[in-house]
Every structure is written in C-alpha cells, then in structure tokens.
Amino acid sequence: MKPPILTIIMFTIISGTIMVLMSSHWLTIWIGFEMNMLAIIPILMKKFSPRAIEAATKYFLTQATASMLLMLGIIMNLLLTGQWTALNILNPIVSNMMTVALSMKLGLSPFHFWVPEVTQGVPLMSGMILLTWQKIAPLSVLYQMAPSMNTHLLMTMAFMSVLIGGWGGLNQTQLRKILAYSSIAHMGWMIAVTTYNPTLMLLNLTIYIMMTLGTFMLFSLSSSTTTLSLSLTWNKLPLITSLILTIMLSLGGLPPLSGFVPKWMIIHELTKNNMITAAMFMTITALLNLYFYMRLTYATALTLFPSTNNMKMKWQFESTKNTTLLPPLIVMSTMLLPLTPMMPTLF
Image 1 (tube, rainbow, N blue to C red):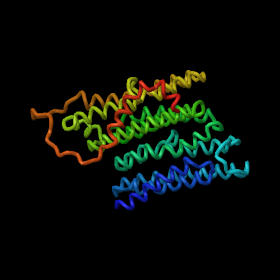
Image 2: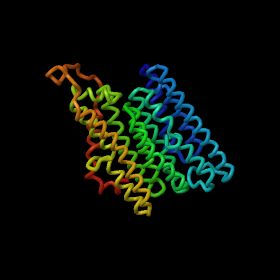
Image 3: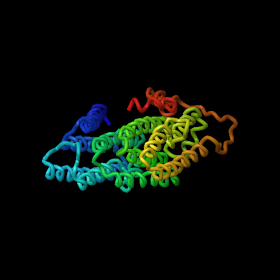
Image 4: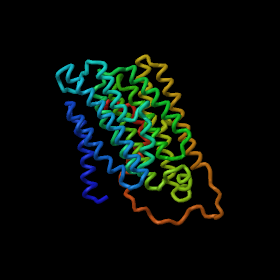
C-alpha cells in the first residue's frame, strides 16, 4: 500500500475512534463507528490474498450487523425519550439491544465466532490493530452506558466469554488464534466489572493493550505465526523468544507479572459486591488461559528440536524492523505489579 493512502486510512481509523470517545450524541457515535469500520477493511486486506478477503468480508458483515442493531436501538431511544444523549437509557429493551450490538463489535461470546477467523486471516500488524485499537471505541460507549445496563446480561456474556476464551485456545497451534481467544477472555473480564466499577475496566483495557501490542510486535520481529515457528526461534533469537514467553505468561495472568494486576483487582471488586461464586468461576477459567500459555512456554523454551550441528546459534541478517516502542512495552507488560497500590488513584 502506498504511504499517502495508508496515512489517509490510518487517519480515518484514528479520527473515527476519537469521534466516538468525544461524543455524547448517539448519531456522531454511530458515524464514528462507521468511519472506523470502513477504514479498517483496506488495512485487513493489505496482503491481497483470498484468506485476507474472506477475513475482511466476515469482519464487515459482523460489524455492519452490529451497526444496524445499534442504529435500531438509537432510533427506539429517540422515539421513546425524544433526545439523542448517550447517557441514561431508561428503557431496558433499548439498553439490552445496544449492549448486544456493542458486544458484537467487541467479539464477546456468543458473538465471538468472527474474532479467531478474522485475526488468523489477516497479517500480524493488521491483527494487532484489530485486537487493540478496535476495542477502544465500543468499550468507551459501554463505559458511558454502565449505569443503565442489565447486569445479568453482562455477567452471562462475561462468563461465556471467559470460558470460551479458555477452552477455544487449548487446541490451537496458530499464535494469532491463541491471541484472539485470549482477547475474548480479556473482554469477558472487562465486561464482568463494568457495572460495578467501570474505571477498573479502563485499567484492564490499558494493560491488555500494552501486553497485546508487545506480543504482536515480538511476533512480527521474529516472524512467528505458529507454535512450530516460535519453537525454532529459540535457536536464532533466544532473548526475543524468552521475552515473548514472559509477556504471554503475563497475558495469562501469572502473579508476579503485570497481567495479574487487573485480574486481582476485578476479583477484589466482585467479592466486595458479594459475587463470590462469579469471582471463583472466572478465576478457575483463567487457569485454562494460563495452561495454554504454559504449554507454549514448554514447547518453545524447555524442548530442543533434533539438530545435527553443534552450534546452536545460527548466522542471520540483522532485522530492519522498527523496535522503538518495544522496550517500554515489555517493561510495562511485565513489571507493573509493584505499582498496584497507586493504580486506584490513577484511574
């Protein structure tokens, strides 16, 4: 893709999301979603192949359906209340319809089927945008709607998402699909705490975005897309491989790492609100995520493939990929746990 065209498309994606973030008027929120959706499709099809076209078509159809449902909810809200304001949706049917539309945009269960397929069909960098930037706008609208949302509906979707995010990733060898299922599970954690403490959702989103960005950038640097190619990088890039595995364990929520912070705080918030069974269920299902990351760690770091040569380090060309953002992302994805007492004051 030519740089001027790429610049215009990226500007449209960013401005669409910013429009959603800054609006309190339903029409401008909807227009922001549409700008964002139409601009991301060329990014998904950057490598022009049948698989990428199929992924972009699936993405478009799902997002268009979600936009249609959202617009239906907006019009019903307008007819019932006579105003376009995004705060205080009094009618439960309208609130549920908008929640379902936004959960389709996020890829929450039971509307999660497009997430692994689309992520697997697009290049690594497009997948990175899909699983990070594209989550910001729908979650910001859910944040505004938090007081008027149906808690039972949200908790049901959260449980299903956490469970499917854990079970779905168990049998995968494709790294992009593993990250897609991880994204579904993380969205479940965020949605579970939305009605109780929406700011915790923002904290979880921030840490999730940092961890996912770091993981995708390291995959791109080592050109790894499958478990097999990741296990072969141990020979070529031992430091990069160990960093990938550390961030992946952080994504799974292993205690000394940053990924444990939002899970810890969400469990604390749920138990404060007498949701002890819910917190226990989500903690147990989080172990499924941790299991498939541990399995990746084992396959990559603790097993050496058969090799005839004595020299394990291979000669290779230096990578020309830009890694400016990697060091801060790696540090923030792994070492934020000591800052936990300060986080409630930040958010």
